[in-house]
Amino acid sequence: MSGGTIRRLEPGDPDYPQGLGQLRTPPPLWLDGTPPAGAMVAVVGTRHPDRTGLELAGHLAEELVRRGYAVVSGLAIGIDTAAHRAALDAGGRTWAVLGCGVDVLPWAGAADLARRIPASGGLLAEVAPGTAVSARALVARDRLQSVMSLATVVVQTDLRSGTLHTARFTVGQGRPLVVVTPPGNGRGRTAWAGNAALCDPAGCDPALLHATGAAGRLVASRRPVADLVIGHEGPWTELWDLLARR
Image 1 (cartoon, rainbow, N blue to C red):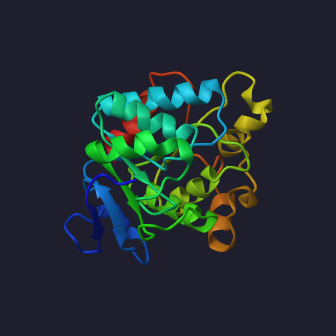
Image 2 (tube, helix red, strand yellow):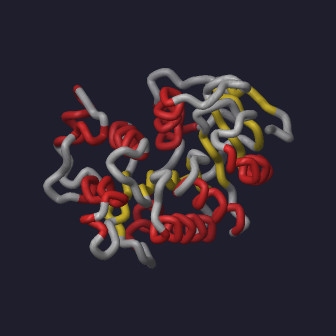
């Protein structure tokens, strides 16, 4: 899949992503493209979005690029793909953190974006080239997306999405978790149930975020779990203010 030079980045390398130094054991990374640099924001969500979620992911990514931020996501079908594509189409930078080798397609329809991204950002993975996608690697990469970003924006998620792993990692890393409130009557729709849980002023069951032990207690103490709840339409002034303070 790779059309460029794949590099291995070790902790301590000048090109190693700074945010990953917060991890207890920063992993070596494989990179196809340019090293991550500058202010980045993770834009994540379900593989099964509705039209509202897809459009919102695109609008948010475009606005982030316009304000000088790079977009981080996971190149999964759905919200991730919409965010990456919008960032590139807006002339911005984007990095995809993969649950497979950087020379492996995470899904069949990812070929075009996997080809475009290294020229305006990069593909990153902690698993070696040639490694097929796996559930374990997908969960592990979620902690990398959040820790290398100023904040994580959850666009749309149901209760089965791996996005909730990213939300748990974001909270545990002390990064701001920004969640879109379900639009209209979305609180009654399965496709937005994860958003509703994260935005609930009464908090949510830590088990929804696969959080146990200290992580579970931290999630249970937050009401809501989200640090910032934003609407599904701009101007998202509170989001820009939050990012400017980071």
